[in-house]
Length: 406
Image (tube, rainbow, N blue to C red; front, side):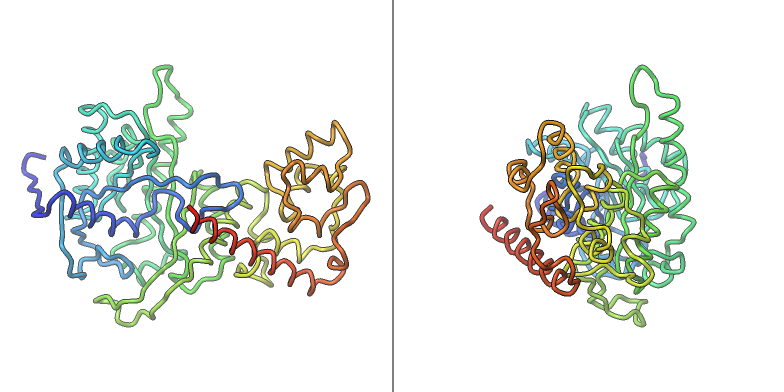
C-alpha cells in the first residue's frame, strides 16, 4: 500500500456530493421502488461511500464509465474509513455503511483498497456496526476472504439477465468474473456457518446482488426464473432490482438503443420477489408462459388470483395458512392473526376489520362463516379486474398523499 498515490483536489463536501451521484448506480439496500411492498418491512437506507469513481470499465449505463467526462477521485483508505464512520455515527437511524467503488487500475487493486478501508474501520476506529462491502468482478479469492472477515454482508452485481448481455451493456464484464466470486462468497459463508466459533462471527453472514430490468429487452418471466436460480444456487439474502437506463449516448455503444425502463416495473419485480421468498409462489405462478410480464395496473398476487378465480371465494374460518396467503389483501401478519383469532371466535367481516385487515381487496375473494359480501364481481372476471385496478389506483393516490404529508 505504500506506493499507492491518491488523488482528489475536492473538498470533503464536494466529494460527498459526487459520491451521492455515483451511488445511484449501486444498490446496497431496498430502493424507493421497493418501499411499501408487503413483507419487506421498512426499507434500509444504508449510506454509500466510494473508494474511487475513476473506473477503467466502460459500462454503458454507469456515470462512472471510463469514457464519461467527469471529475474523478480516489480516496486514501484511512481517510475514507474515518469519513465512513463519521457518516455512520452522525445519524441515529443509520443502520450502517456500504463501501463500494468503481474499478480503478484493476479488480484486485481496487479490492485491496476496499479491504484496507474495512480494516481501518474495524481495527483502528473500532466501529462495530453494520458494514456492507462490494466485491469487484474477478477479484482474487484471498481478497474476498479478507473483505468478508470485516464486513457483515458482501455483494457482486450480476446486472444483466443473460451472459451475452455483458457484451451489450458492459463489455469488460463477463459471466465468469461475476459468477465466480459470487460462488466463492456463497461457499465461504456456508463454510463459516458449518464451523461457527464460540468466539463469534469470523466471516460475512450474507450476500446480495443487483439486477437491472430491461437491459436485454427481456420479459419478467426471465427475470423471475433467474432470481429464483440465484437464490437457490448462491443462497442470496436478496436480489435488488433497478431499472436499466440508457438515455444518453455512451462512447463505444453507438448501436445500443435508448432504453428508459419504467420505475413501476421495478416495484412489481420487488413484489413478485417477495411472493417467491415469503409467500411460497413459484416463478411459473407469478409469470406464466401465457403472461410473462407483470402488470402495471395490478399487483402480482392480485393478477394471479384473477387467473385462478376457480379457487375463490376462500372461507377464512377453515382455510390453512398457505391458502390465506393467496388471498389478495391478506399478508403474512394478518394471515397469522386470523389463525390465532379463529381459535377464540368465529371470524366475521366485522372481526376482520377489528383485526386491521383491509377489505378493499380481500372482500371480493373471501367468505366469513359462509357469508359473501363481495357483490356480483367474482363471477365476472372483467368487472372484477376493473375493480382491482380502481383499488390499486386509490392505494397509489393514498401513498402519494402520505409521502407529501411526510
